[in-house]
Length: 378
View: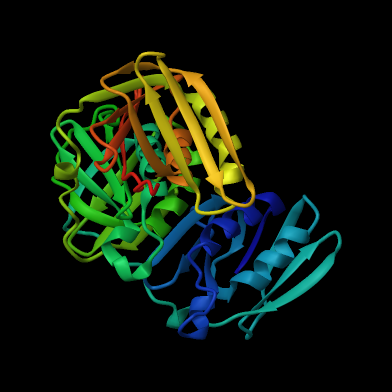
């Protein structure tokens, strides 16, 4: 194997696939990146795989000799990232599982392992397929990923549930305290909604997909293929495959109240700024902030009390319908949702101080964010 490529290109692609390399591999070869050079296509392919999630990418290079080898992901990445920003030569040493990296700064030898023991990435041959625009997919991920659970014992809640209906792909995520639901209606140009999707994809894999999408054309289609155990996303020359989460996802739609007796519309940025200031005091104790809706004054008061430290209170204008109410929330949950919105105004809907409240952006994004209130102790 021998190829010449730009240091920046190799560094970028190594960083991408290394996200799928386990920090504590179950066997040595899984701590490596699989590198394949093809002189016919003049492309170099890289693969990282932790036996649950796999990332594959390829890039153009001057390939002088074919070959395949696995090299330590972290060591190789650390060396390449520090080399000068110019062309570098990667050449396999004859009769040895090692390569030499050559640049103007010098030469580095990196020893690897044979590619024979590297596991093949799972394929999805007979599953369902569809295409969705990168923009719609990114919108759904941004609006849902933050609500997944980080508690590994809640297995199915550590992922985002994808549910498809005609002309619609819905993203849902909950950790038991809040629920985010995003409806993406934009199909990729020329594609037909042929799939019937009802799967839960691990958040870890989707966060990597989100990063990959940020460097991808927003109008370009993403190919999506899945079966009962795996899902595969293809973005041009990049592929991400991951094992699906097992278990029945909660019937989240029935958690969202059908009607509300109180409604409040307010400026999103002003609301965020007030919450962040009050959060300084709320964070001294339990992260709880109290919202006081005053229908007569058409104002919202935001307050927090941290005994022995101090208290804070701010008042902002709001359009309120319904009776006055005092209701409390974890300020972090409120801020997480509000920061994913891009609209100028938000609508806050609730029934009582103990029932779920819903926040929605007033704009193009079809998103519902449900938050459970915290009981106020006198």
